[in-house]
Length: 196
Image (cartoon, rainbow, N blue to C red):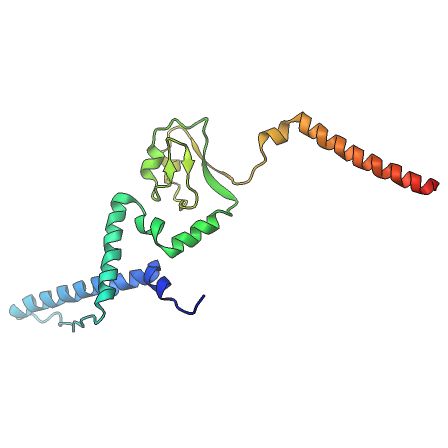
C-alpha cells in the first residue's frame, strides 16, 4: 500500500524458500563439493572441480533464513506453526475462507470424541472435545476424513436454512397470512379508487 514490500518479502513463504536455498542449502552443497574435491585430488582423481564460495555480506538474511529453517523443523512437532501464526499468505487465505461456500464440519450425532481427527490435523484447527473446527486455519487436507471411525466429519454447505424455518407450519402460516393480508388490502384499495 505504501510502495514498500519489505514486510512481505521477509515473511512470504516463497521468498523464504529462496533464502533458505541461497543462504543455507547452497553453502552446504558448495562446502560438500569442495571437501569431496579435495579428497579426490589427494587420490589424484580430478572428477570434480572446486566451486568458489562467496560469503554472504548480509548476515541478517542468513539469520532470518536460519530461523525460518528452525520453524520448518518445529512444524514436525507443533503443526503448521509458521503458517498459522506469521505467514501473510496463510492469513490472507484464512480471511478468504470465511466466505467459502463449503466447509468441513463435525456431525455431532456421529462424533464419538475419539480425538483421531485432532491428532492428524496439519493445522491444529480441530478441537474434538468441543466439536469445533477453526475453518480459517483449515487447509482442506481431508486427513480427518480418513481417520474418523464414526463418519463424524463431513464436507457440507456453509450456509443452510435452519430446520425450524423449513419445517415449522406456524411460521409458514404466518408468512402466508401476511401475504394474503397485503394482497387483500391492495385489492380493496384499488376497488375503492375505482368507485370514487
